[in-house]
Length: 462
Picture 1 (spheres, rainbow, N blue to C red):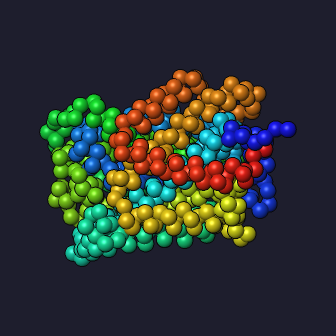
Picture 2: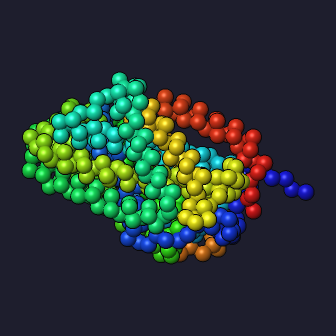
Picture 3: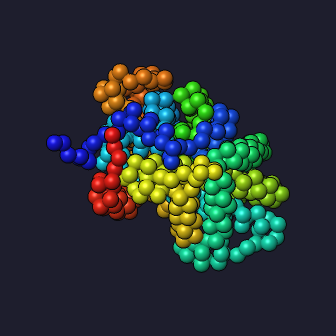
């Protein structure tokens, strides 16, 4: 008689069958266009509007575009691995499901626990950045809101209720259904892209080359250290695979959408980072709203207000997409029995995992109210990087253990691409501060206790 172990795996066929169960079936309503903007909206947010100033001032200096480029190359390598797995197992759960199929339950638990943490923290972090831009907008109009209710206790405030308000707004949209999520994401992302293109167009004319000297004030070590932080700018791209069960023709749609979105995002990040450091000396960029600050430096207060207005709507798109993605991971774990079945329930009318959504958005609102951006960004980085590493490894393992599996998309030069993904993510993980590992280790320890007490005994692996 065989006994279950922590290394038991979910078969590809079993994973697909769970997605067809009546009480757990989601609705396929996302096509290529809304999914493209959904991906852009999930990724472009805090990383481009909040982090460049801090990274340039403390880590990379004017070479911060290279930090974004390094992060982008690693992201593209990892994205190719996600595309292959998504075409092989087109169900909800992203890296959690992929690891369950290839490496086993304990690794799937770690990845799922990481991803829930990652997406929830992204929502909270972007909400804090959104709050800063709302405050900036009112300041530009001559009505500053003050610090008490717009800053967390670490920044001299009482509670960042503005951030909590933003999270509550996008949560209401997500609970209404994936079609509305796609429609709202497309509209909000267009506004965000308008803000980016406006900044690039106006900013190029105000670039002063002397601001790029010295180009490497912290050396290449600083560039690599900055890459680990700017990698947060790309975190969230994998979320498109979290909503696979809600995508039309996922085997064809995902490869086209994800790869085109990643290339677009890398180009935008590098461009904004270069223009920002050309307009404002890097030593002056350690501010919560660097793009709006750059408009002030250019003597364009009207532009500051307009850009803040466009950006704050775009940041809402980032919160919406990442919260939706995180809830699908939590939903998949509930459906698999690793977490309470309640989390795997689908609303009979909206066909959304409403319990999981309420949990993710509610937790994000609390985090956004009380924690600073930089700390949250570092913690989200290590969670996302760990998931990327294990997903890349999973694709390589499955190439050996299941060479017969039908793969609508196959990564070219998979071992070379996999090596880039593994080496890049491992290097970025190693460059993070030791205190980040301590905090993250505490989170993983809590997760393993939950798994031992509940998940192991209730799992439905087949």
